[in-house]
Amino acid sequence: MATGKRQGRALWCELHEDYLVELGDRAFEAVQVKTRKPELGEWKLSDEGLAKSIRRFCALREKFGDQVQRFTFVTNAAVREGKSDEDAEESPCCLFRACTSATQISELGTVPLRALTAFAKKHNLSFTVLFDVLHRIALVRGPSLDDFDSVLSHDHLTLLPECGAFGAAQLNALRDEMIHLVYRASSRAVDAPTRHLTCVLLDDARNPAIAHKLIVPTRLISTVLESRRLVFRMLPLDMELKPVSPAGPASPFTKKVEAGGLGFATDTLRRRTLSAESALLEFLARAPEQAQGKINEWAALVKAECDDARLRASRSPAPYGLLMLDLLTERLRERALRTKEGLAAEHDFLMGVAGLLTEACHVWWSEEFPLGAR
Image (cartoon, rainbow, N blue to C red; front, top):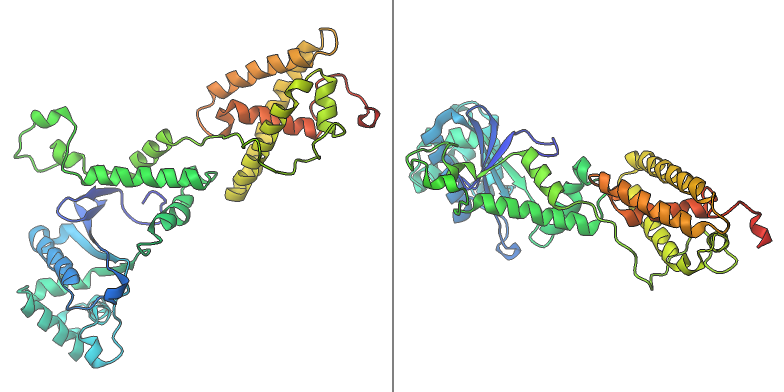
């Protein structure tokens, strides 16, 4: 729902069902989630786990009627297809496919009709209610138990525009936060103080015990992004990355920094530069459509601050690089504090961009000079 790939405006957790997807006003989809160990093989109609889910669906249909419009069975395991008449009587796929295709029971073929009759009799279900449920049922194959975490992080969360620039560690943190939200909504525990002031007979959203089970996409996204802001991290000292130009006394970066009287800060500035370069490359790989525009925006911002700092510092006797660095540090720190989120909210990142601009000869820490002369 949050990605816009699926219909629904809200999710209710552990309310009448594992999950209820709110489709519209008084219209819901009931979802049952069942995991299964691979060694148990495919789901069959005789398996109690599947039978129990269908019984739950039938109970909901009898109680709420047309308010529950769809039923979905989600599992990590395969479901038997049925390649012969004998297999078909044990095949959920054959029965469900026949029921979803038929508009009434009389349209069912011999094998699915026999399977439907046997299932209704075995589980003491209304024949018409069972058909009504299976006419609206869907089977969904989810990720395996081993792959669940990585699939959720890297196949699904990356569809959210807000997560486009996130690295692996941040996506995993977002996944954990989402799982925690669902866990809290599924819990019986209610933190709201109004639970002690509300009539226990209320069975709607006015009851905090019910209201806390609701998750809407906007709450999901805002909660996750507020608590897991994109973080800029400095690379370790021993990280070996090739900079734009080789490190050393002859590199343009080193020459320009030392000409400004900043030889003592060369290593720190270079680390920030390499760290910013790494962050930008990851951003470019994750969100190529928006990355170039943002990179140009950040570069222009930092270039303007560097030019302003150099203009003020150049009024002092040379070398004035130390004063320029002091002014730039304060200006970029203030800029980062005014930024709500993203890489630009990190002072170290913005200083690293200043290093990249130095490397590209857009920023100077002294009067300009031919690089081959020093």
